[in-house]
Length: 424
Ligand code: UD1
Ligand code: CA
Image (cartoon, rainbow, N blue to C red; front, side, top):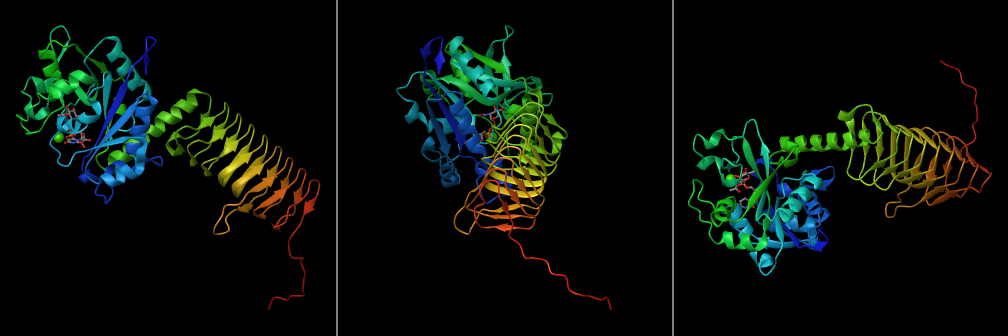
């Protein structure tokens, strides 16, 4: 990370050793997903997005599942016995020793912190020369959380856990999110002084704050503006809640940029989707990560726009349409009951109701390429690999297995015969 023109070292430690009992799952809590992406992967990606040079994940319970998801993008430390958050960080000390810079502490089950919030925390920590910078929040009901103890001047003195707090401390509404940015050398030194002499008999990472203050080392805090950012996942209801929070956040961002969403509650736009201005998203639409949609399109209702789709301007993708790896040219209409997979279609086309690409032969996914101004009649099967030129007409009900050159009509269906019939 560059601070005032200087390259600074930042490491992130992700705590991911917990059991996650309340998920009632055979899988690690951390590999459960929000919008197709594992919780712990969201956290690791966030760590890299804010400029971490290295990420260390402290794993324990069902570690192999976490390792399978993160692979060698991160380093691993092992915590076999859960003796507290301080103990978890101690397991990562071998990666921290000999380094100078900052270490950010994140949790594998706190996955929707905004990148900007974390960047702000790290930058403040460097610029104000704080040895510990805490991310805190104001909670109307702070029960269960560590409370932030400040002196009369507002300086942070310590964090007191709920179970160790006296009646006055319990009144404090500023809570510890558990996310911090520490000076690496002073954290290592303070970790040596943590003792499990508290109500839970744990090594509390939170004790580091008092230890640093007692040494006269400056500490500080950033109060998070949006409390939903620091929500964690302990059970399936919270998993749903966080998915909803993320959905509303992503949808609001698209609306702010000029996209109309008729019903945010039933519109599922995954991460990293680009949508142009004046595009209207009708209800019950899912748009997967990485999809690009142009300006002034109509999408839905009941549309499923999957990975790898690139949709031009003024395109209509109507009801019960599924698109996968489909590139759709400007002004083309894909209005109803259509599946296009591994398909490229040019401009000003029209795809009839009930048309599907037969893109999968049981082994491979094959491509369908369609030129400009194509008119595909209703209920057409396009058996890939197949290429259709410009200005083609495909007769309704055709099963197209051979390429159709430009300016040709393709027709592939049984001729109709009428036979005398009399109702008995
Ligand atoms: C912690 C903080 C508390 C804060 C709260 C925010 C401490 C002592 N307290 O409390 O001030 O308000 O988070 O949610 O840090 N973990 C490990 N190994 C361990 C212990 C914990 O990996 O040995 C992981 C857990 O899986 C979990 C996270 O660390 O993801 C927090 O642990 P937990 O024991 O739930 O902390 P809290 O008691 O909630
Ligand atoms: Ca605990």
